[in-house]
Length: 486
Ligand code: LFR
View 1 (tube, rainbow, N blue to C red):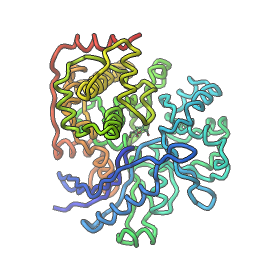
View 2: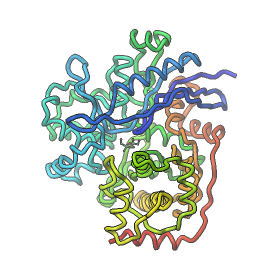
View 3: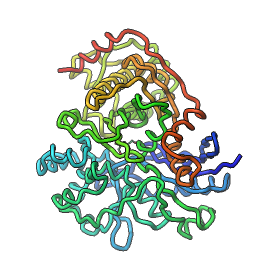
């Protein structure tokens, strides 16, 4: 049967990958070509992404992909909010900052002093996160570099620029900046004016399925790909790609895109811009086809990843299956944390910060690795439950099933605890939802799949999914939740 192959470049906060997706009638498969670590770079002025290393790994991956298949097109997605600045010659000014850099600790407060937060929310619909692009710019603009900037490119748009020379801002990612009008789906010119940001700094918007140019000659040479290999604009915000790939069969679902972050919420037709929604810190980000991703960020597997990094430095075991088995045998509900406590955001000794949280809140301190992992997973399940219940109320929707996608869907204990805590059935998988969403938007741009419903049905029909049914008593979770209330 006829099928086409697409290359998906998917960069996450801790690892990146290049995948090949083959799509045909009733057919979809994904193979990994190359996986690489994404290790941040600490320089004198703060925490950065090692963007040239990421670009090099991307090129290596594309070269291998091109040897394995004839590539119809390439799509790029990454995490959101971060950007590179280009000068008037199109040269990158400095290495892009990492959203976990501490420089926004103070600027976030400054922006919200200059602006009425309610008004900001009515325009952007964005949850308050200290690292939103708007706050990063507030910190950046006092540096010598900023005045030299002619264009601000979000990370996927920057990599696209390096591959094809084209300049654009993909819309799902643009919606995470805090400079975007969610109701009009355009950059907010009034907001830019008030902030004193030249509108020309922001590139014209492009939408998933739009063409994004063809490989520059020197890129075609180093990747050994055909000269006119096209890039397709995908949902370049990884979370938007992941949600596009949720294998839902109806619209009464909630999703949890679980990787470094847990993004838990609903897909809506229109944004919820009420004061209650703002105070609950729900975000309205753009999904594909003008859908709204109504969700909250929960600290996610970052807590566990950072624990493992610390344990590795301390010479303790870090093998995930071993840690999860230990967590299964650990005592339930010994202590719970609020995963979104600001003290957990920065890189560093995570087990110590978890112990500190337990001490501060008068709970037993987890004394071994199994207890720490149990505490993290139960706390994430509790947060999943709180966020989804709130989302349903605020958006006046009924949830009958949770789709848990992303790397976290491989974690059976987390999936089961999420089912138990919410009292809802959980469908887990696909783990590579982001890359699949990336591939399927490319397939759609070339007419191989038709619409969002078709994309989701294809995933539901072809990918291995696991079902979890709620067990245990809801009251145990109520009691645990009550411990976190002051
Ligand atoms: C997930 C994600 C989230 C965003 C965070 C920072 O990878 O893209 O959606 O809030 O990273 O960019």
